Length: 398
Image (tube, rainbow, N blue to C red; front, side, top):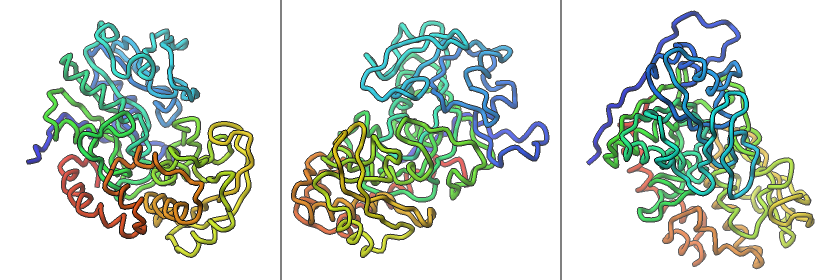
């Protein structure tokens, strides 16, 4: 039985009239700045953040907290890609933020959760990172591990919430099977989950019974059907290969394929919009996908040579994905259709690692046996219907 969670949720109304130039949506960080960090007064803070932890006027959350009266910013914690969001490597060292002088503890190096030594002098962990709404994007995994750490050390945990950039209405894909949790799949949720970080934190605490003092500083003005371009907020690339809202939208489907011997465009100017391989025939693949008549999408055959990652410096044939109607795109369905076309047309495609991110063995086994895309997607419907009910008590936005 679900246990509805009733944490402290700050749904602050504007304390002063917004200027005409202000975005229609205010993030949790904006609310914090507007109120002089009142919700965190008298707290000793360890801030989990990166370069996306910005107010809409460009100020860093780090600096807002460092300068706030009655708040002590003790240290910083950085996720995958580091504090500046520029590193694309497996281990990231600890460091120092030069502007604030605070120690930066890496949570993507020798440990992925804060240790007791890192938490010296901290009574509150604050999370402020822009997620993109995909299960295998690791920032929410960092959040979950930090939530568990907060519970173990009896710390408050605050989330400065941000919009889900690919919308909060749609959710797609198989729900992660219990027992298969890892850093690229931290919770039993679909590939495209349709939650904000704050809502997911509420759900994790509410469903698991985690004993933690959770505080969510909610966005103002965001609605579930809004994609990022409707928020008026400045876009900041959340990771080195996530460079625009189109790539964020495509990522839950195209990114699903990157464990296989296929380039998903890393090392090109348009990662997750381009995909292919030396063994692929882009013209044939684009023609096959056009026949599928996938809503909101078009496909152009291309040739490209990645400068990094899969097939670096090798000529590839493949496709460029064009989004023609963002509201109609179903990225996970796209990924599954592409997988079926690759399986049926290109024997050189090695799909054994598809289940690394899919995390649904029965679906993968059906895929190997030759099931078509529609049959594969139908396997998830009951779990998605249950997901709709599971998430309802924890939603913060209409």
